[in-house]
Image 1 (spheres, one colour):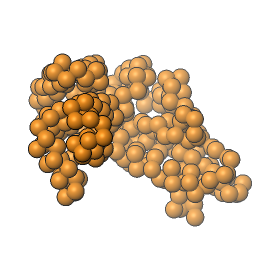
Image 2 (image 1 turned 180 degrees about the vertical axis):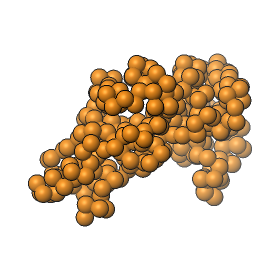
Image 3 (image 1 turned 60 degrees about the vertical axis):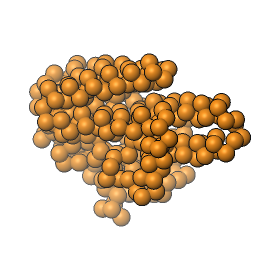
Length: 289
């Protein structure tokens, strides 16, 4: 029914009939934005081959108010221009987003009173996909060099390291007994991966600081830790991550103030992906704001 899928339809509309489409367009065209103060922005894949749409929600009401094809600066500027045209440029105080380089420029240009908040999830995602992945590869290589690629030690190391990058970034409350056991094996190994055990929590704590001064101190400690890791173990991605934290500090140090993230938008995107699967092979894609 239209009621059950209403929250997702601004994101992707693959309709079964013209009547369905007319009803959904009536419900979700010209969404009210007059009370908009805080927004969250994220992209979602709409087709294979790196094709995306960018989704915007009212953070306080969790309502999608705009979607555009693409994720470039040019693509998202149309939504920000729409906000200006509606007289909201001084009303919006914060924008939660990932570290897409386009967002700071666009927000500064169109929403002069809004602060950028880089989302914790995406920073941790970079940590896992780049730094921890590189460390895992280095650790496996060291064990294989010492004991041989087909040795029992190498096989055991590969088994532990296979999920290490993911295990190491999980918050304490999400750890299952099996994950705790794997992390304990890493601790006992007393190697490169064991030195990385506290790093994800160090980064995560920045978003829970009680003041900008505390957040800045925590960020400085993180940057120093990743710089040291890069120097001690020749990890290029750790050095890159440290530079990223420094260069994006303006959007990280605002997190303590607004306590927001793109988390609610991730839920919207998940529901949109479900609609895509249900509507497989329907070719009508309607995106508007």
